[in-house]
Image (cartoon, rainbow, N blue to C red; front, side):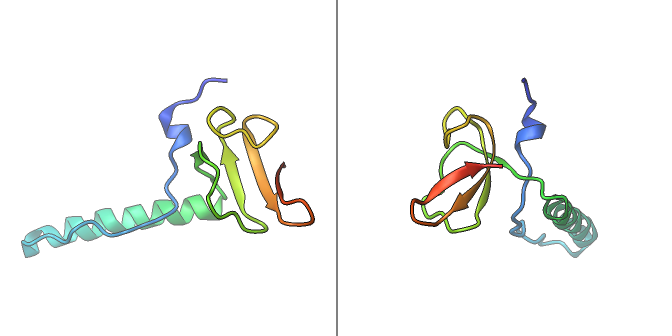
Length: 94
């Protein structure tokens, strides 16, 4: 199934852009930053996961990831996986 870059990238982290020097630019800056934060909250609220192509270096019990199935294939191709840390820790497809 083909997918567009918009399907792949969904940001769940925020760090502020540099603040403007000019006070006149502050309203636009705040508007844009609040929109970015709103998008992140939406992504978290709807549990929209960003497709990843590398296994996390320090997976913890209960971690959930959307594997691309090509560069990172936890075992059953592209899809959503949960890390289960039991007697034999592994990523299990949901």
